[in-house]
Length: 297
Image (cartoon, rainbow, N blue to C red; front, top):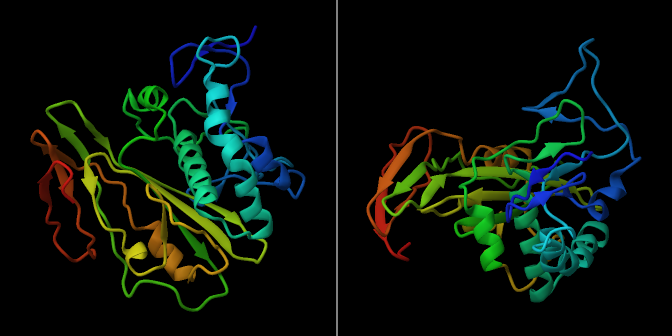
């Protein structure tokens, strides 16, 4: 008998193997391309005898989502709303470095934001033995609200960058950090800010790197976007997307990007209608927060 889990969107029973967070059409090109390893904090997962675990197929990340046996059929909703509109454009960029127009960029940006968000859900699991997916602390109503409104969550932002390990320029003058806190407000809103990076190889030898940040009730300026080294894909995607014309990060610039959002446990309580503005700072600079109201940023 199949194990029954609750759908992360509507709470209905989710039977079967679950939803592929990264769909087969995305992962199949890498299947059979080598013996894949999975790393945690830069270290490969090992068996009890000390040998490194490897497999021929790229790792699948699964999530309990209801299907045709449910009146909600959240699997079909995800497919219609995100997968079908984005698939040709995701493949066009990854396979052929194709330039995308506004509508195509919108579809691609929504798909990447949705996919990276779901990959961090606390109910996710991995097909790779011994590998536990990196998980975020999701607000209880985050995905149910997404299903009801058919909109991606507020304060969810996605950036892209291009990394070229052969480059010798493409970095900030110094390492910066944005200390995103856990926020609380009297109306019950807020949550823990979290970030994730995902990278994939491009045909020209560079890497497409995506940075997703969930920053409830927080506003900030992304320093790589400010100088043109990163592009915001969501919300407000660009009118065209050409990954071959995008400025590149060198290896040091990529390290700066990885360290931009340190995972802290600080908390900020906000008054009704309040949001907090987080400064971008160097390690030696003091942290000065400012509270704003409504839509002020």
